Length: 155
Image 1 (cartoon, one colour):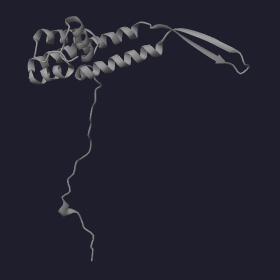
Image 2 (image 1 turned 180 degrees about the vertical axis):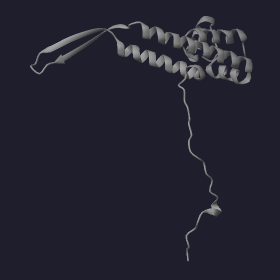
Image 3 (image 1 turned 60 degrees about the horizontal axis):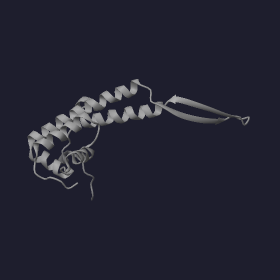
Image 4 (image 1 turned 120 degrees about the vertical axis):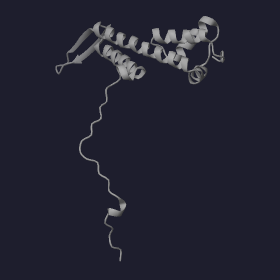
């Protein structure tokens, strides 16, 4: 996807729109734009735009913040609704009998989706959705000068 290298506000707006309204990354968004328009900038070009243009960098930051909100909301939906599927388990009892069970709600898959969505939301907007890290210090901090350290007698 070699595409355009000159800044194009229309393409920049479309990149941000797709980032804000989908869970896709930049590479997928650019592929979609290339499909729509026939060409698109490459990832390195978009990164160069961000570096060179503070207004585009801010626009991308806002799009990522919106995408984080979208992912967070989706995680809540996944957590509230069962993910229907079939999980079959076979257990062999000590007497040799086989017991087959079927489960309709794939809870493990739902948990994985929720964790993945929340983690990505935290990466995109760490101040809003990231894990809170607190550093506490107690006690005193002392300084010892090298001249004050007793040295062994080497005679």
